[in-house]
Length: 378
Image (cartoon, rainbow, N blue to C red; front, side, top):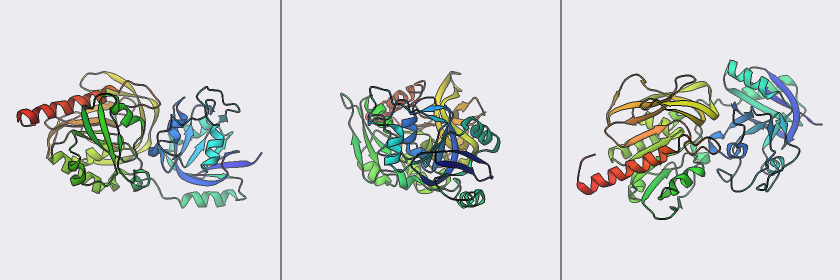
């Protein structure tokens, strides 16, 4: 058995065994609480530069398949599991998880106490980490290497994960609307969710200009999820402001929610722990309805949750808050067609409590189309 080490920047080291690819890898240590959906987690671009610790002890039993990928590759920097399945047993499986990770060069570690790691991260917060597998290094040398890794605060990662050129996801059935989806690290499930509602989705690069967006003549603009620090995204923030000025309806999720918030004048900040997993309780402040939601975010917005706020685009309000810690999870403008949430309404994998938000976006685009036809101001 080849030894492997999970090394945190505070000097804490967990010893396990080599699993998946060998070598070394670095990133931000985060834990993910989902009991299912490990393949969607691995291929979610939002996990770029993150070493993911799975709190569920048994991982890999259903293997992997081509249909459940959220992108073209595995994006996690490293993968940490307690007990990888020795057997793959599922009728949809096309490959073994470990074999897939080896083929893509993803370093992992198994046999560690993921519960103890999670408790440590819950006490100390997300931190830099390295996995060292099959290497002859002292403990001191490993810690020194980890402490040289850049922190997630200030990380500009969008250009790594965004599409190089536009592509189209066709509407299912009758085409009712056209949406320009700005790819900040989009998951494949999101355009599919829109397409299922008769929306033709034009996925465009993160650095698309307002002129390129207007040339598509879209009914709405979607701001996707993605990795990195939203404070580094000033160019995209300025583009969102131009979209707001053009009065094109906007729907943002996750990273897109943070960018919309910054476009409205709010600051973002790094969460100590972050929200990751498929069991986060969020309350809609207007309906008092509680949704169980899927999250992956390490940053959040500073916005008032107890009163209507004022922006240059008119009044707005925080619509959703996390019941665990009060973090802002959604907002909307009251006199302009723009709203966002901090979580994943497509929930792949996860609960479908928030899928209605896609319907809300369709209703908003329909409203704006009708107003333009009748000449009524937005």
